[in-house]
Image (cartoon, rainbow, N blue to C red; front, top):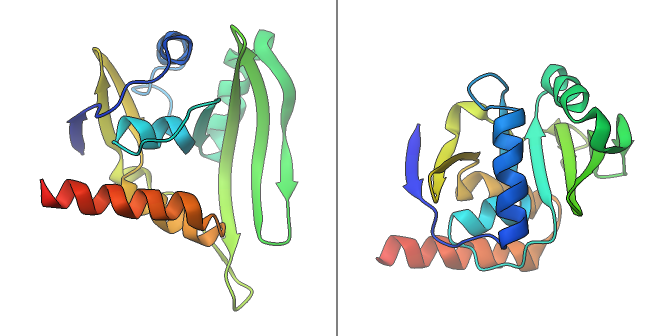
Length: 166
């Protein structure tokens, strides 16, 4: 387990909702990680944050859905595209959209499905006293490359290079 001090802050509203999520679904009891732009930002990738992405496993996504029942906009359901599939649900708290994701898999060129989710590699970011579970930038880089999101992958790569130089 790696610990770090958050390298960049989140917008105030997102931090407030994240604090509420950490209280409602404590990571000590529920296996989850903050991913997407918010998770990247805590680790130093300078990207705008529009929502909060919570990634977990199949069992836990339904437990989180129950905890957020009053805030759910879309029930957790199977979502699939030609290149990606996951369980996906949507909530909203204080105007901040929250995506609940589980069992994310990407189709490889040979047609097999691959996941980049490894909860044994969590990085814990301290955001003003909030302990936030995230995935390492290296894992996020692989996932963004697999999604074909080269612009964000390039930003992650540049951040990793800058961090290794410091």
